[in-house]
Image (cartoon, rainbow, N blue to C red; front, side):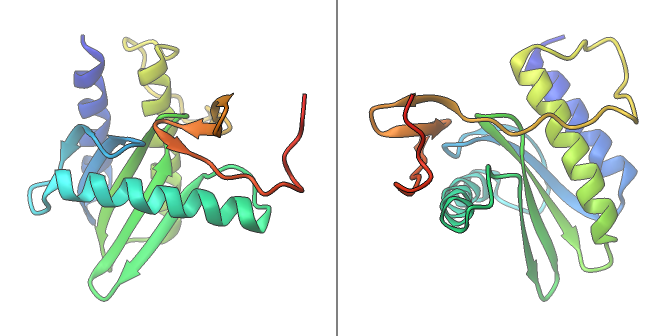
Length: 166
């Protein structure tokens, strides 16, 4: 089965296990839709905004010394939008109504992001179900370039005092 179909299968699993989740989206770090299951939201617009939020989130964690980007949670009057790292080049975004258990949203979002990362990098066997005790891999960045480390197509700014020279 193709990787895109497996990613879509994971998105549908997320929606099925949490009825409060109204939409899910896997996107590249530069805002291109990889797979989606969201009937009420324009996926291309959300993917583009996710990429912009990802860039801001990366810069915020770098500036605050918080390490690599892991997740971003936005709460609105009607619910939540949660974005999770899915490897070095993709993100998983979940849209949920205001009745969602945020702890469970994080648990399932982190697990889904880890699985999607594995699918996109070819490390996860597609014929085996997700193991409940499988820990999420650490988010990593792509190799450094002359503009600094990259996350997908987005350059990542690292303050001079934290940059390590090799």
